[in-house]
Amino acid sequence: MAVGDIKSLPRPGRLGEAYYLWGALLYMKQLFRPKKGRMIGGVCAGIGEYYETDPTVVRLIWVALTLLSLGTGILVYIIAWVLIPEEPGGETP
Image (cartoon, rainbow, N blue to C red; front, side, top):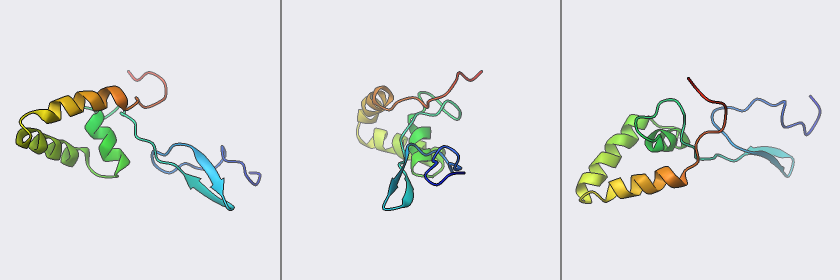
């Protein structure tokens, strides 16, 4: 592995682009809708992975907030479904 060779370094977890800043290798986290573990559109699963928490907890919080906001959470979910990109990669069976 050559110095500065980003492609040959392991990428822990679900991380996005890698770059160097003052000689230190940094990773930028990116929010994606995963292809595995989704229930409807993958929004809660993606948020759970981004914040490194269980997607079930995110789903329960989302449902509670939706009930408390008289259904506004449904509209927010649909908007998030459109705005959050799907996880890059090939098709999954």
